[in-house]
Image 1 (cartoon, rainbow, N blue to C red):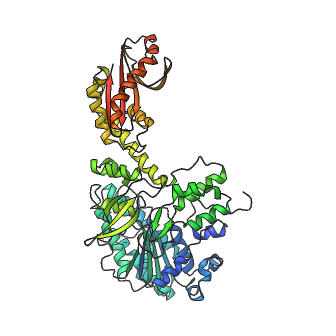
Image 2 (tube, rainbow, N blue to C red):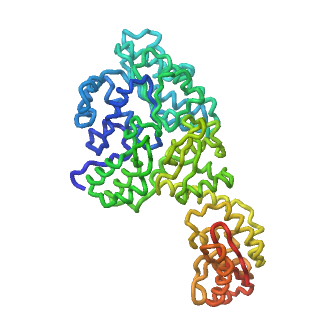
Image 3 (cartoon, rainbow, N blue to C red):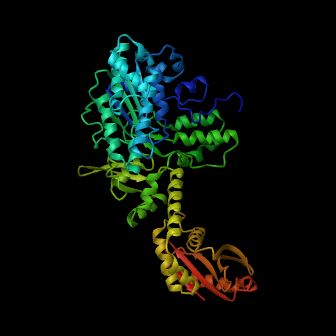
Amino acid sequence: MPDKKVIPIGIEDFKEIIDRNCYFVDKSLLIKDILDGGSKVTLFTRPRRFGKTLNLSMLKRFFEKTVEDNSYLFDNLNISRAGEKYKAYMGQYPVISISLKSMKQSAFNDSFEQFKNLVQTEVWRHKELLTADCIMTANKNTLKMICNDTADDSIYWTALRLLSDCLYEYYKKKVIILIDEYDVPLENAYFNGFYDKMLDLIRSVFESVLKTNDSLEFGVLTGCLRISKESIFTGLNNLSVHSITSSSSSDCFGFTEKEVCELLDYYNLTDRFDDLKKWYDGYLFGNTDIYNPWSIVKFIQETLSGEALGLQPYWVNTSSNIIIHELISKSDRRIRDEIEKLITGGSINKPLFEDITYVNMDVKSEYIWSFLLHTGYLKSVRRYMNGIQTYFEAVIPNLELVTIYENTFRQWFDDSVRAADKSVLLKAVLNGNAETFQLEVNRWLLKSISYHDGYENFYHGFLVGLLEFSDDYLVESNREAGTGRSDIVIKNVLTHDSAVIIEIKSADSERELDRLCDAALSQIEDKQYEINLKNEGYRNIIKFGIAFCGKRCIVKNR
């Protein structure tokens, strides 16, 4: 598309976006919110890929004192029209900016090495300190050891505090500290078994640089969760937390509907608005309706390049979604019923916890639902008090998230079926034992989630997966047979001595199960589904009719 700005996929440096004349959704009034708020330390918690890194990059470019004048970056943005008192802060402060999102190693030592690299890179960025006369020799030597990778490991626990003190001494201005994705190392450590060690590191780093730091002007942190009960922020009385339930800066992360409409209008895609709303809208930050920004820009970028294959769950590829897999794979019947209710458009009511601890985040605890809320997998449509406890009514925000839940459940279910001992089921099918066949299918139905509203093709796929026993047995679907197509045929390809024909019906009520089961058997006979099998040499042919309704089925044979 000629003369149109580029969609900045994968670009998280604010300066690069402006310099390359990419399309930028203006979130610069976040600067005003932070300055007006006056907090010593501000924590913004938002889901992954909702603009946290880009916003911190914008803050860095606005506040940092550099040789190069960066004021032009903000010439046409909202902050430039907010008043002269805000412009006065531009380019006036030394800034420490560090992102912990890369600390995802499988062992603590490797993760700590990554942290050391991050600190080393930030010290090198301020290499003017290494030769400055105003900096104490001992401090310069420590900074040099960090740069040369010869510093003792213990130095890194307070290295950011040392760097801030040196910057204050050099610039005679207090330091702004920006820490992106502060909780990524903790989440990673939790799932890899070294949580306590990582907790000690993060706590020590934050206490030294944020708690009693006379060199600090203010700090801004971002993450998915507020993890305060674990004492990361102990004693930090001036911490201001803006979570997804807060009204402050609620429109500064993610896209508002107005911003989405402007994007679509700019790229002549306004006809896709209704589809995008169903798929990527539905988040609620404070009282502000928010769209998933990553999915919106990915859709537009692929559409403009001609690569779009339709609406996709783009967000599923931004992280492991491990917590959804954990929830489903370790859940009991009660939790699976609640997930099914959510997937089919219902809501559940759960206690709301603002402070999440990974330690008590067992999938069967009530904390898991607040975790899903804060990380973007659920939406709160209502909050209310019951005694002293706050509760929220939760729904799945949009079709993209429904797809993620469905696909994750389907993968878990398929894995469970493949790993299960199905010898009892196999014996029942091959022996024509309708009663045991029925019991086994009903047992698996109770473990499933009926996210296709009981359509016959859902039951068809469900049964095909369940009946895949081994390479000795070939399972065929919708096979041409007689005067029609049989739903499922199972053949013993090793001995050719037996085969099974299964016809499936879906009922609207359990009262119809018996009648439809008989109708399925009659269809096998009427359409002569067994003819081809007889021509192939099969003589022992077993016929089953199965009728489903919800999570119950009836099986008959002939």
